[in-house]
Every structure is written in structure tokens, then in C-alpha cells.
Length: 329
Image 1 (tube, rainbow, N blue to C red):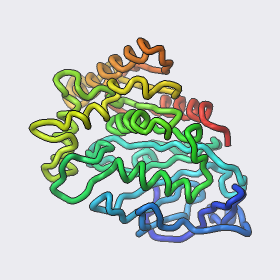
Image 2 (image 1 turned 60 degrees about the vertical axis):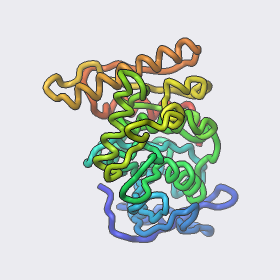
Image 3 (image 1 turned 120 degrees about the horizontal axis):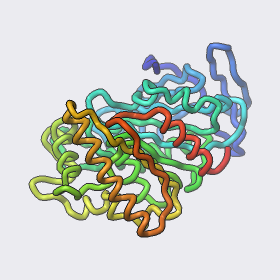
């Protein structure tokens, strides 16, 4: 598990793409070089904590005016990052909602093993317990502008500090549950940013069933993140914002992207939360897929037994597909 003790190591980035640093792991020094620069502040982010001790998983915590507390991020590097000199594609991977979900979620689930030996950088940021990857309509606890933090601050910070392709064909976005919604939202709303989008048990329709997902976003954010504020407004929604965020109303924005969808067909009937969650996910994904089919937009989708959880085999399949779609390291 990622340690949160502050240390300093070198993050490499040279103008010519050949970089080097000292990165100490279990086997000792991995690489040394002439040009190296530590990760620094920028794009509205001030680093208040870091750990670059692990040869692959590097941790940072930021102070930012976009968020009223200091969000964290884990950056998972390829095995050969410190000595290869290569530039890599990058996956932005978003966690789900709940008080037990944060930027460490995918490390707990096994992201290191899923990506071992694979040429991709994975960026896993905080998104709030119920931030919904949005800038909320209202907040009673200070700023919680997760969308601004991810798109306007974190993304350019990553590209300034790591050897990534800062281009459409160099970036993918994926997530589980609330994070799957965030991935679908960002891929459509910021069309030129991401060439691949994946939603693992992520809702794709905000308005269906009398707006159940949008109401849940409002209720959960009010309770867990915003001190009674809401993502979309209450009692009346900010309709333009709902439309802008709603995947099924942004179908043309998915053209020429790789699309990967996973939904469960048999949630636990005794667990009401699992049942409501995954039934709504599956219905919304089916609606979304139907609209993609009508528009003749290819997609890869899976309906699998079980309920609302991260399916490790599907994550591995997805990561392999992302690497296949993006620009090669």
C-alpha cells in the first residue's frame, strides 16, 4: 500500500524526451542521469506532501483553490520508466463514490499487477466521496470543483512532470461506478482530450426513470461532499448542466473513440443498494449502447453476472485494449 510519509525523489522530464533520475527500490538504484528535475508546483497546484520512494507508485497531495481540502493522486509508472527514456500513453482512472473510496482504491484492487510490464502511465486522483466529477451548482463547505481540478490543473501538471504524450491519441479515461460516469462525461465534454473511454459499472443516463441518477448525484453529494449543496441544483436542476454532463445526450461526442462498457446482470437481491445501483447502471448502459448503434459508433460492451463491483478480469482486458488504441510508447 502506498505510504504517505513525505520524501523527495526526482521526476524526470527533459526537452528531448530522454530523462533520468535516481529511483531507489528494493533492488537499489534503478537509473542515474544528467538531466533531472523534481516535480514542482504549477497549474494552480502546490505540492504539500509526496512519496516517490516506490519505483512505480508515486504519491502527491496538493493544495489547490479548486478544492477546499488537499486532494491526493497516485501516479503509477511503467516498470522501465526510470531507464527507458521513452514517452508513454496515460490512463486517467477514477474511483467510485462512498466514504471508503479515494485515490488509493485501485491500488487496493490490484492495479500494479494489472499493469506489470505494460507501457502505460496510470493517474489515479481523488474525486471526492460524492464529487461526481463535477463543479457543483452549490456548496456549503467551500470549493469542491473536481472537474476543474482534474481537467484544468491535474492533466497539464501530469504532462509537465512526466513523459506522457500530451495529445488526443496519448490519453485514455476510465472509471468505476461514479468514476465511470466521470470518464464518460469528460470524454464527451472534452472531446479532444481522450481517445479511449471506459465505464465499469458506470451510469450513462442521468434523466431516465425520472432522473434517478441525477437525483442520486444531488442527494449523495449533499450528504457526503457539499454540506447540503448539490451537483445539479435543487429543487430545480440546472438543465443546461445536466444536458452537458449526460452521456446519452452527447452521442456524437463519442465518435472516433474506443468505448468500453461493463455492467452486471445479477446484483445481490438482499442488498438494496447493489440492486438499485447495478440495475440502473445496466438500463442506462443499454440505452447508451442503443443510441451508439443507431449512430453507427462502434463500442465494446459486456453484460456479466454479479452486481456493483470492480471486475478485475475486465479491468485487465480494458487496459490491454487501451494500450492497443493509444499511441505506442
